Length: 467
Image 1 (cartoon, helix red, strand yellow):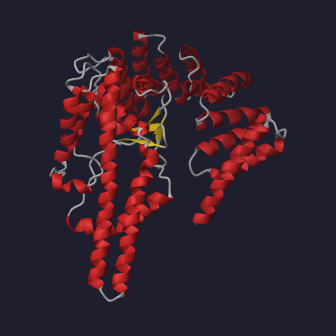
Image 2 (image 1 turned 45 degrees about the vertical axis):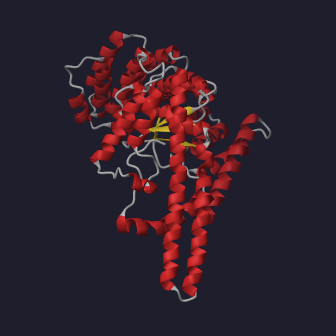
């Protein structure tokens, strides 16, 4: 995990927090934490393709297959990245915004891959269990002392126990971070990627520590989840500067693509006025046009947005992502019929990229022309076959089935959609059960509906018990 600022406690706040820590540690043993659940996952075909191309050389260096670890983008301005589950890496949009180049992001990805290969997400409960054992023992001893009339002594045992538990858990976490740093450096080296970006990004984190007054003293290290950035820089520099890849130039194609998606993300997330100040119209570069296209589109100036897209297409008329953007602006401006040709070409040129195919399916349906529904069904089926974790594609496919009068498969598509959307287990269950009633028993679709129903029913029951 890469994060700022490190967790640090001091003075009276430390003592008050110790009582809360034991409860947290106990909960961590009992519950599998899902840190991404509360965040918004941003899906973009171009960004996901770049992340995978940045990740694959690191995966091969680690002895894995290309595509074996997926990178997800979260819509959060924090400078952070983490591993959830066993093989999923989550990168915050704030980290992309803070990074100056692709090598910095690859340094973070290499570090997170170190967590994946170390099984740190799976082993997180080990540190919590060890700390919880100390916590529970101190609670029992403290309670016994208090019951025997030694109130002060009992409170002292409680305080010391919870502080020891906190230190035990945070020390465990710091060891994992240092291990991931070392592993990440190995993967960068084997992949032939310079560690310059990794050091530069840690320097950014160190500057933030200075800015926010984070205590740099070694004697405060027990209260941190991560080693201090200065220590990490010093340790890694000794490894990187002697590596053959240290002076190797960055991949110019990867860097150009990174600057595109960074500008694109800025235009999508940031306030339009801020985007237009950062990327003035005098800047006719591809990243600047990308950012302004989104800023104008968000500001409800579709013609200005299309003007920027036209400038992009002049540089490469067949770029699938430029064509996708043109289709998106037209579609979301109420011109679905005009959106279809660029989206069709974008699907073809991207080899049926599922997110782009889902947008084409949406445009075809939005025309409300029955002649377009057969094509919509075809492209949407392709989209969910290639990526069945896109609730929007399932929603559109449900519309197609309902339009055909196939209510059973419309319900199945809705069940798929709701099973992917957090907190919608009851709706997933209801639609799956409806689908099973109309599908041939034992058919592949019926079995799929049954699977969704079983999972959704268990989730509904768990929710009911918690209440």
